[in-house]
Image (tube, rainbow, N blue to C red; front, side, top):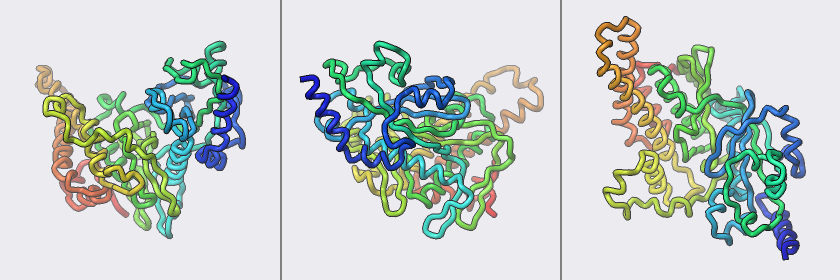
Length: 401
C-alpha cells in the first residue's frame, strides 16, 4: 500500500503543470540534493527565520528562501493545517518569476514597451534550485537538509508514516540587510523619511513597469542596509528621480502574495480561500478593537480586490504604504514621548535638541501624509501629491531631473 501511494504521488508530481513550468527557470534541469547547495555556499548557511510559507537561510552575501512544495491536485483534496503552510508548484513558480522580474529593475536600462525604468529597491535574484528533501532522512541524520534546521512542524505524510518524494524550491538572492521591524527605533528620523520615500518611488516604478502589487508589505518584509552614497537614483522613462539616502538603502522582499504582469502574462497567487473571512461585516466592534493595524490592511485589501486576484489594483500598494507610515509614526511618537518626559532634556546639548526637533517635524509630516493618502489610487498618485505640494517634500526632498 505504501509503495503504491509513493508511486502514485511521484506520478502526480511528474505531471504537475507548475512543476513542468519550474523546469524552465531552475538552475539544474533535475532536482538536486542538499549537499550540492551546501557545497556551493561553503557551510556558512544559517537559519534566519520561518514564515507561514517558507524558511529563510543566509550567509553574509546571499539569502536562500526554501519553499515546501506540493502538487495542486493534492492541495485541492487534502484538508490539513499543514497544507496551508505548503505552496503549489505553480504558485512557487509565479513567486520566483515575480522576484526575478522585479530584480531586473536594477539594470541600467530595463525597457518595457519602449519605456525605460530602474530602481534598486528589489533584491537581485541569482538563481533557483529544485531540491530533493526527504523528511524520513531528516529525522535520522539531522541537520543534513533544510527541514532539519527549521522549526519542528506537523506533516500529514509523516503522520501516516508515508515515505514520499518531497521537494522544495530554493530561491537565491542578495542579502538585503536587516529587518526594518528590528531596527526601526534605532534609525534617525530623517533616515526614516528617506526609507518611506524610497518605498513610495520604488513601488511607483514597479507599478508603471510591471503592474506590480506587493500585497503583503508589513515591516517584516522591508529590509534596510547601510548605504555610503548621498543619493539613490531611480529612473522613470526619461526622468531621473533622486532621493537623499541619509545612510540607508531599502530592499523589499517576499513576493508570496504579489501580483505582476510582464509581456501580457500575469503572475499572481489566488488567495480567495485565505481572505474569504475578511469581509468586514461579521466582526463586532469589540473584536475589531483588539485587532492589529496589519489586519485592517488585509481586510481593506480584500475589499478592494474582491477575489479578482489576477487583476491590477494599485490601490493595494497605497494601503501598504499607509501601513508603513503607521509603523514609522508609531516609532516617532514613542521617541517624542520619551524625550518630553525626560527631565534631562532641559539641559540637553544642541545635538539632542536638534534630534527632538527633527523627530517632531517628521511626525508632523507623517500626519500630513495620512491626511491625503486615503484619497490616492496608486503609488504614483501619492508620489504626485508629495511632489506638487512643497510642504510634503521639504524634509528629505525628492528631486526630479
